[in-house]
Length: 257
Image 1 (cartoon, rainbow, N blue to C red):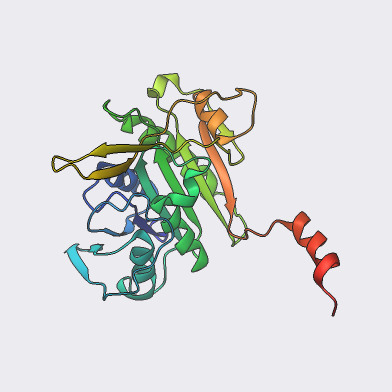
Image 2 (cartoon, rainbow, N blue to C red):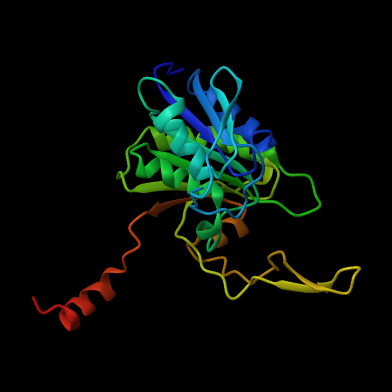
């Protein structure tokens, strides 16, 4: 055990989420210096948002454990800037999210956003998510078993400061996992369903629906394909969103200095 390593934990499912308990189990195989700062309630889909129009409040649950009435980004910012005394964390772990965060999900995900904020503040970060089937038990044992293995392997190396790691566990039992695969970020087709219905008073309302099943090429190197193959997907995400090929074309077309 590496007691000198300080780890910050957060998520977007809230301070009482079962996935956060799994994340703490993973972290405690590495160190005892663990700090938890998580949202007071679920913040799924919050993305990388900050609360700017009202004050934030942090509430101490127990030693080294707080909840904040804000977004995952707020939580990480307050943790690193205010709530954790002395040295800042050596590592930030986000999750374990109930539901995968692959492909386009990374732009919506509060789980990814928490890791993103820590990365921006100079703390190496890993986001972890457990794929699920709605209405069925979540296979947390898979996240715990392979989370320990993957996190330890990742922290044994170094990655660039502007990169964060996105780990997704397949929706299968531990015994059915087919290894670990380093993946690229996938891309879905137009997949968000919008359900229109009518309330008891006759007024229309809309509900963003679940993600339908889609065809995946099992030979692809994407996170979606890895999960389809029952593999744990590990994707390095880069904070610089600049598309360099287009950038170079535009420089020659528009720059005249």
